Length: 312
Length: 160
Image 1 (cartoon, one colour):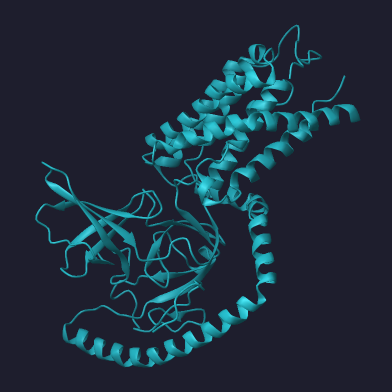
Image 2 (tube, each protein chain N blue to C red; image 1 turned 45 degrees about the horizontal axis):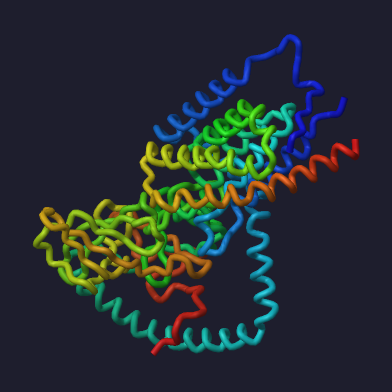
């Protein structure tokens, strides 16, 4: 510990700026970068290049995780076979349900046309693999393996088989970063399915719950109410489940009450997610986008949750 | 005159970056030690010839990109750590290892506070209590990290 190497750090005539000045310069540089980064997107290119250059670091950091997975897979061949059988069964059931779904959808469309509403049930989607999750426990972000090259855009909605996962916040050439709905920075417009009340849900930052602040004191909200996404704001496609209210809080003397909800999507399970293209009515002429890489959204998107209970 | 151990310096920083990024079980994720400040502080403490300030800036920017913070947030906090440790080197090197472990705890606390404060300035809220767990974890890690890094640096010195 007490080895002060005095070989060459004492110059008789020190050259260059001193330690304090150097630190000050670097801190000013950092402050400028932060201000520029927060103000607008001018540093986006630098960030993209940095992210690209740091891909090996990401890769090395996920090695132990992947090694464990590989080991797991090698050991649990029998489990995989059982799971395969289960999934096959499940697919059969889902296919049969899909047939019913198509007729229901046709009926629904007819009724909607009667209502003169321009809402289409079939949205364009793309399956993305979740590459990594942000390891900072206060930021709920995931990295996806689809980027600008696949047409992913900033603000695009992300869903899984059970509900809304979040939205894309940064698009890189081949990858994209998405913010989950439980992140404290995230807000999503929601509709209470039972009453049609429009409000919004913020992430609580604990990874498990959403917060519906500023509900009027007399708003009709009950524990167990289902929240679905609302098209207000034009960012999320309407009608996807978001969560379920589990608790109501009324501050004594306060004007508003607050509801706590658990998200419907399985936020930390599975390795796939669906990117949804939210076409505004009129922007997309054909009701059914016919694209090779594109699958229909609503009939049970593939789920990577092997622990899911077999369907009834 | 021996060459300064630039290779070991940059390599140890890279390893710290990877460790910072590596997945931990959920139970201990909040107590992840601050690997980068530990490595930067070690070099600032024992080797005045390596560019600890520059390393702090570059590795800080890398972790800003990797963790998707405002660009410069980690970098500024790391530069402050490097500056403090370099400045107070004369005091720290006199302490035996266990005393240095305690003496450095305020530095980790300052780093954690800077991150917390800048998160607040950039309007990113988080649970303030769990923020202080890494300070404890880092203090516990310091003797181990110091010994390992010292071994590495000493072996390189003997090779020269």
